[in-house]
Length: 231
Image (tube, rainbow, N blue to C red; front, side, top):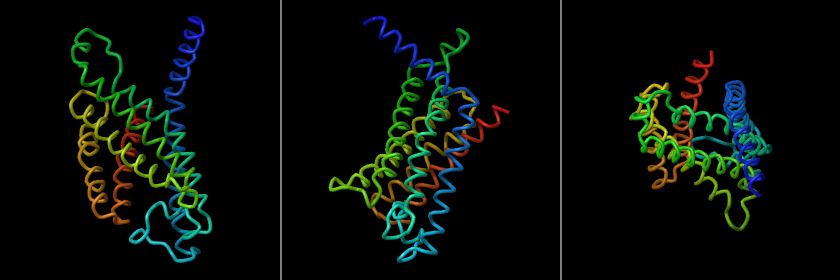
């Protein structure tokens, strides 16, 4: 039994090390970002031009792109969400690794406080929650929400997960020395939660789009930062 556990632990470590290699992270970032943005833009265009009732970000939720009531091809949102959620994992693991990197000197050990580790871990936990929600909104679209209203549940999970991931990761960037500019950390900590709170009280479709774009900005900004370090 001990040998089996050791073997599983070794396999897990090898998979983790593989996922955070710069080449894999770069591929995952390019695919997830371009894939989902192109799927959303294509979905909006099709729903606006060929949808049964038309589509507008002023009046429609993002989830409406995954329903036959608004678009003849809901597969764009469904596929984009599920595929991009999976390919975002290497980016998330690499981000946590950068923010929680093992120090090399005794002076660095003193700087790496427990709060930094806790914030990084909370950020990764929230990020994984967002990834699960991201996959869930594609799997359980508005047309497949079931009697349990799973689409609404995963919509809450994805936005809450990525908002809190931004807050926890952002606090690490702001409070400690990292390779990511502190202005990005300040944005992550303060901005996305604002449209999130407003949306809770108003349920306005446009505010959901603001929430989406606010999350897209910090994720894209960190990806661009990583691209520069890779090059």
